[in-house]
Length: 83
Image 1: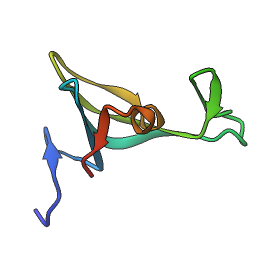
Image 2 (image 1 turned 180 degrees about the vertical axis):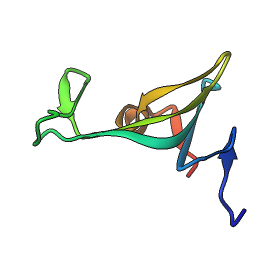
Image 3 (image 1 turned 90 degrees about the vertical axis):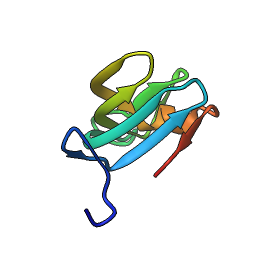
């Protein structure tokens, strides 16, 4: 399908894999948080950070659909962005 990847019929817009065996498949942007606007960003390691909150499938020892922080994944050295 034109190089697009899908999970359960939903297009994957970004994906990450962790050295610990977890995979994160974002299918939509749930929220954009910016330090300089009314959202105040996400508090990560005790300080506000610009962030994108994604909704998608998280696979590991369990399988779950839910929201996760793109910034937290970026900051974790054990996590690699697939696309």
